[in-house]
Image (cartoon, rainbow, N blue to C red; front, side):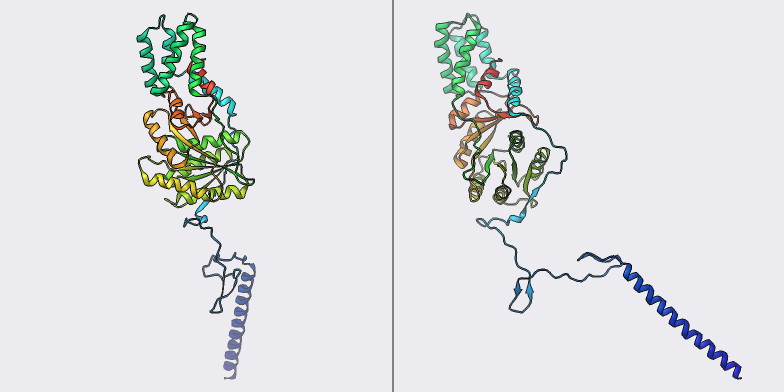
Length: 409
């Protein structure tokens, strides 16, 4: 009998010892796993799931309830505009940047293209030189053609009268002499005395020059901003772009792409329909902070018949000038629009004090006379001209080169 109880006791003791060993091995294994597990960053969760401990942030002091809270960030507020943090800077990621063409070589190439075009003004001048005898009917046809080339009634009459007097005395027996007279009289209308340089001198040291670009839909305004950035980069200037056209979804993306190609940063909003004035203000503020030479602000293409939108454009300019004065307001006009373009120009000039004109699409289908007419109507010079869709098809306007191109020289 005693043998039976001895066996039972031995089995029970073995079970107790085995259980203790299993427990200790399991505990040791768990401790080993815990020691090998990598530390998690604050806020991350372990692969097994489960919340992580909250890492305390800096606090400013106790509230009336005795609980410390993080300080509120300071926010710039201008005329009730959206907070500055709505706008973000798009930093160029392109490793190989484009090398823009030098401004002088741009104009030489554009002048050759203008000389090879067949616009109405060029045809009128060419036809006049082609006739053997100039009578009253020829002069009437010549004046009519000038008017249809968007030269305008006044300038067309002036040019016709001046040519009639000079060619009546000198005659046109010598085609070279006749062309020289045409060049001189047409150059007077284009007016080489106008200052066509961009005003890129800031009002005070530390501020950037601010260029505001305006115009109606379809004139190539955003593209012009991108091309202008290339012109300035070619002149060794640091540039920042502001995408204040927040109504057209693709505008900001398009502008950022232009900037990336030449290493220019773009300030834009990630919020659809954000306040354009707020984005423009943020762009200029960043330009001041970064010490750039020029900030170019693109605005929404506004129909000149929409009074509310035109008023908003005036607001954009006023808000920008709370940070830095606008040194240049460029109005982009499609050279093919003719008289409608003149109507647009007059209304924009009333709202934002236009200081210069950019004429796009001044190619074979354009009527070159609009250069003279827009300057006469507004008293504002054409400062930049575009001939074509290439990335470097924008150049500073040169009066003598323009006339030479029109005459095929």
